[in-house]
Image (cartoon, rainbow, N blue to C red; front, side, top):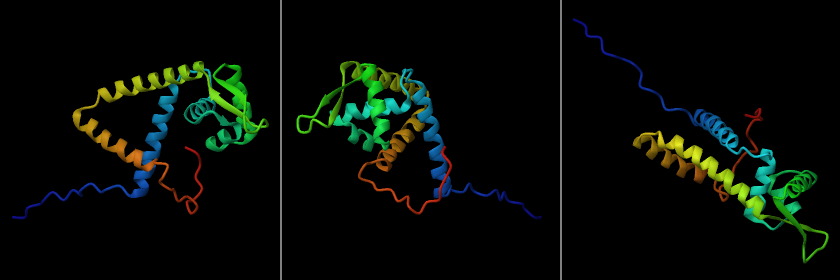
Length: 166
């Protein structure tokens, strides 16, 4: 008598490219969901610029443009809007009067703190729904993501094919 054994293939590990695509998709979706929690009257670009000024300021507008990887005229327009809203202050540099330094005001810091608190609260409720195993896995993933996004890690992108935006 012949015995038929179960020959179901074992699940295969995803390729590095499959893992990268899945991770990109999930992180993009998470970033979008977190942006939706901002509930601010500012655009994502304006919020990013405000956060950079808060983290690095007072900084020249040109440095802000470099940090945000935008053109100087765009950075100037963003600073004008943030200044008009009362979120940043502009002061001439003591070393070079041609340079304007941008710093976050109390209102700008309060806005950022409120947005960060809302985003953290939303994410906290989502994480609280996870079981212990998934929370442990998430802690490991967070450490890996921190490593992947470390400023000291250099990315090799010159040889990568062009891709449409997510």
